[in-house]
Image 1: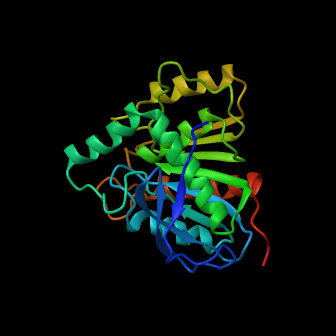
Image 2 (image 1 turned 45 degrees about the vertical axis):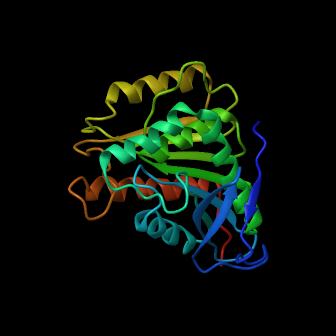
Image 3 (image 1 turned 60 degrees about the horizontal axis):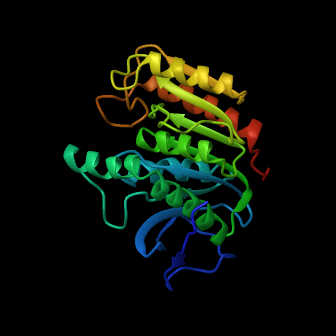
Length: 249
């Protein structure tokens, strides 16, 4: 496991503070990042939310707020660095490519996300990790690393396993939401992951939606597929209740 130096800026509130949805700067191995944390109450079970290749944007913040309203603490992590929110495809490929090539750094960032949740007072013994697109691939990296989690969920995420990795250390149940019309990540890729998980005897669920393209959950885009988004979100909320029940009000 990588050694992590996780430093929070002096502008942060103490761990006992309940955030009503705030961004904050933190450091991992001397690099600055800016995440988003929201929680309904101290000690709420934690969801770590991992962004797509656009970096942490209003989309992830909206999803975090939706989950916080249901009783969860949510840490939307920053995997690229403070102020790095690429808009050009070549820049998006550069930043995701760096982490695909440097899995040690990616795992450090994922460990840092868990520590950030602990710093803010979330219950890090009860964790679900979720990710969109690139964030889905990162969520599977979290699973393969064997980090603490009750569940792992991906939405139209990358599904490949890097050479030399496997799911032998995975502790969580996985649920994978995929669009059958995804031209970037195919049904063959989905089936391949299913075979790996079955071979490793990892509890999992693979859900595919007909007609749904890549990025089918992203509001206000050409790729948005309302039915697939609503169905996957509904199943995800049920998955949370199965693996990480939120406290009742």
